[in-house]
Length: 370
Image (cartoon, rainbow, N blue to C red; front, side, top):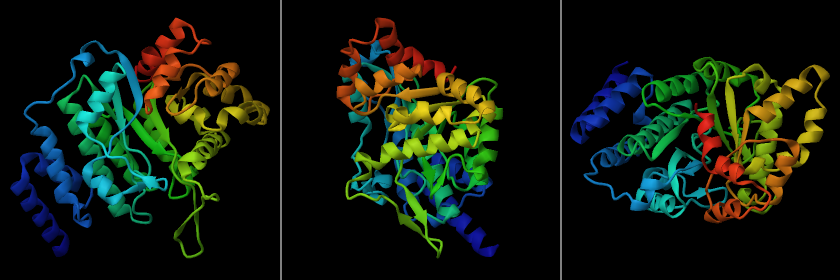
């Protein structure tokens, strides 16, 4: 107890030396049992968050005044996060600045971006609930700082410290109720546990109870891993290629098959799922997979997939993959612009009507959060 009090005192001293914003963040974290002292970069993180609040003026491109498109697959990379995660999926983690993000939005007529943190997100410290919870809280505080500075242009998906379910529930409650998160971002697996794992059921039950009709969950692929006999994690990418070239698409398939077989998507009917990258490899097997379900679950599974799955179009998914999804009746799609050429691909798609393109660019995305 003495050690904990000394650590708390040291953090409060840091907060007082930094800003009132840092003090509020630290006190809120301590109320939720989160110990920032376990992270050596906490001072830098708090300073960067304060720096956003302190920006006297942000140059917002004039083009954004009339932009109306919505981007639900929009990653940010805080500088201190980049330092601890220099690579993502075996390739260098991209550099990111708010100015560059605003320029991209202006160039592609994106009027609103829902921010999120890409893989590995919370899973930087496998086996450490304490470090994971501290990292996640700082990431969410960084995201909301941007949102509060530019609320018309941004909202955000909360990061969670899964596989630690109780801690994840605590973080979701804080992010949704105190920070105003638009929804929740989950990875395809958290330390090797896929989203249909029954240990995560309390989290989904909590999310399902929050909203009578819509609770948005944005899923993002991460690297596959296996648990070894000594409890450590082993990279399970069986190929020599970076995860983003192959495994990311398989990961999306694995976790949505898991969510379906575990009946998670059937049992929690308020949850709306944003499926990344056009569903990865899932559309090519979806028909066969769904029809293999027991008769009692077949209709419910089909209904969930066709009404509560929103397939984002980040990455090179036009035209063939999206045409395949339309063949399955899986619509609407949620718009997303991780790559600039995807915008032109939607605009030039001859197989989509003007109304369908408008849905992709704006109305479908907005309907997720209504």
